[in-house]
Image (cartoon, rainbow, N blue to C red; front, side):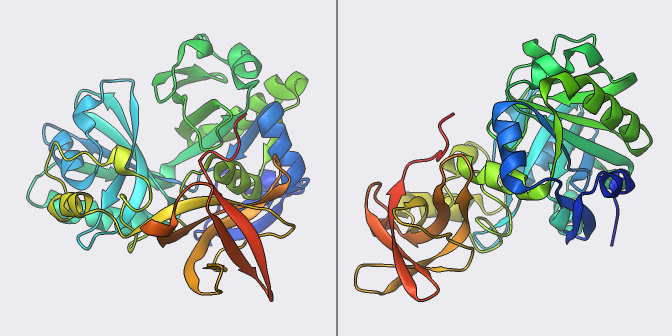
Length: 361
């Protein structure tokens, strides 16, 4: 099992550690509800250094990115980031990712930890005919997510850059926590604002310590992966391996907004045909009307007790104090406000299909 550069720090802080995507990761420190509330109301810091980073460089870099990703990377100027996905050849998704344009011919791809090798092999396969320069820098870089409504205020003392000026899905390369040339990115997967900081493994301990010191007056706390999951689910953000995978179409998953048919990409013809014909199933969001916690794999059933789908992600929402979840159902049964039932052990619990996000802030 791999460790991040901060693993010993998390253990010293009393974190509960679990294996996740091949890494020893902190799942919680003081409990998911308290950590969740810290991010929604103040500011928290996550170590997400298990994520993968690839550099794609050279005159052919954009050609390769356009081929393997669904979004239109020609829209990226230096200093901008873009959410995208990599379709596979059979209608599903290899991974979702963020693409950063660092320089004119240098792009950073940030991928999910569990998919690093799979993604690298997939991109490499298409690069054989294109010839961009590829570097897997995943093992050398760390990533901290500083998230919450007080993130800008709490972190401003650590940088000469005006953090409030960095717009959503934009980034700067500059000084932070006494280190030059870190990426300060106004991205994150919580829905409560903040930044993601990319730095070298040798620098991350200094950054972590200074972040906690600067944020002390603002109530900053370290946050584990359990709260990361409840925060992203309240926003309805897809988690790879749960809500999207090699068998789910980006169109079914509600990711049509990052699937641009203005260019040729892997399996674009088949996905365009699917869009034309109309999807047959759809990822829905639901809230329980009664007590209960929907879990991944639980059956979604209709009024007659017929299984119509499965829960892909589910939890007790700390912000809403009710069970929430995502799952795929036939398109004709996906109307907002429709009632469905979730099979929780022997009980069928009433739920309502709702619009995302669950948490409105």
